[in-house]
Image 1: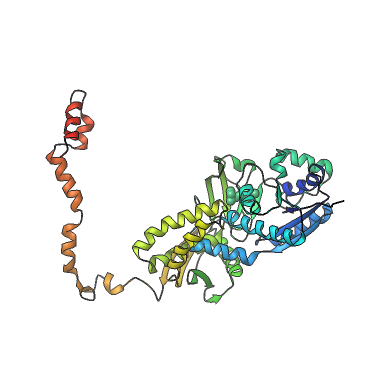
Image 2 (image 1 turned 60 degrees about the vertical axis):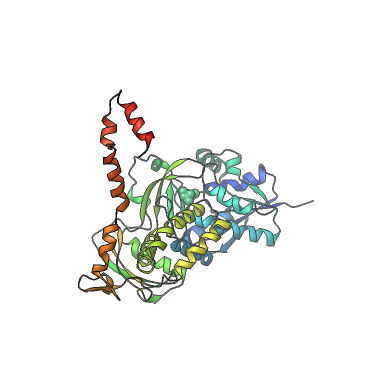
Length: 422
Ligand code: ARG
């Protein structure tokens, strides 16, 4: 007789708790193993997951992926990554979680992998993009059985499943080192102003202000106020300091992968600070051409990361450009935290492209052997084609205003003029 085991991505929340008896009863698994991956969620959540697993009587593993996840968050900083204003915490965490679970399952010889995602969200796609690259059977009970939150709550009550505690089930919350997302309940109505109580990482913006300095080496944040910190500690430090000033709240309409438009609330103090700091330093050390092209590369990186496809060849190729430009993003940025905002106020770098001598109002020479008078020729040519176009319009009497006010009858004349060319 075989003993079939399924590894369930387990948070201890309502969805994944309900999945345990369903995997045994509806899918005939002999054993469900809960796997919680630590991507920097609050310790209380990890403890709650362990307690819930114990109460359910299942084997439970906690895998530490915080260091790998923090590196991925820094990759996102290098790409100035946000999707519609969201710094991508959940999106970045899912592939890391999926990978860690698949590795454990391969080591332990489990037969299948399961997640508790619904059929409406992005997370199902992100998990499965990783898992379907392996030979494991993939199971999504909530989606496949068409479960609703109300049904789950009732089922859990009937069966006496341990689902209390945490956020009490009113909201669906997902936290990791980079972002905390809050969905559901009255927040589903975009016209509802969130209660202050949905926030846990950020204080209501008050009157205080402070400054801090972030140091970067080749695009990677390495120190805060001169104190070197490893990536996880650095993110935690900034979450606390910027969160105290209400920095890093967003309330957005988000277009999900399946086309649904949803209202999302997020907290992400460290992400907001690091993204602002990194962009400020890029402004100092990159050329105009690099900055302009990088916006397109960054946008594509963020959209692909949102889809959970961080391991795709496209991302690797984009990172060729991102890494090449970030090689020079070394220096420090000072930022001011004040009333829910973060604002770069100073930046310094040894590899700065900025020349004070060239830009100064006080210097006669622009730089080297270039003088102000050399700009005369450039100024004469600037806008040359616009002037030629304007002259052509005037020559043919074809002004926009004229065509707009053209009445029927003169239309023919206009068409003739246009088709005859100039
Ligand atoms: N909408 C965000 C995303 O797709 C956050 C999802 C949060 N997930 C959750 N189960 N609350 O990345």
